[in-house]
Length: 130
Image 1 (cartoon, rainbow, N blue to C red):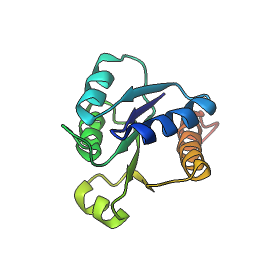
Image 2: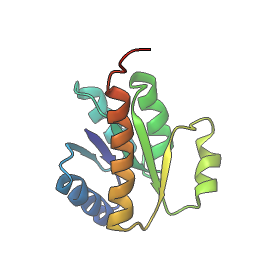
Image 3: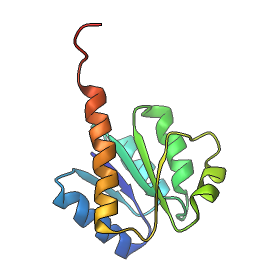
């Protein structure tokens, strides 16, 4: 399951279309506060947080830090029009987050999400022997 938090309606629809095309279950929020409330009300596993860094009420970095407190296995994909280094500076200790610069292509977006999903699935496969 992907928790998608994006305040730009066109990018939200663009991202949602690609995620649904690739058969992901998607929870949708238009800001960080709504995404956090949605996650807290949802008992199912959320594998990926895909969020804009700059949103009203609560930005993506603050959202990721809050979600990691209760869902430490969630993978984070942050998107922004800001340069990646600016996002990293704002993120502080949030070193696990992946980054995708806006405006991204369909292929770039889909490939990044697939790579994260593949890594999650690889982690879930039990190791045989030691």
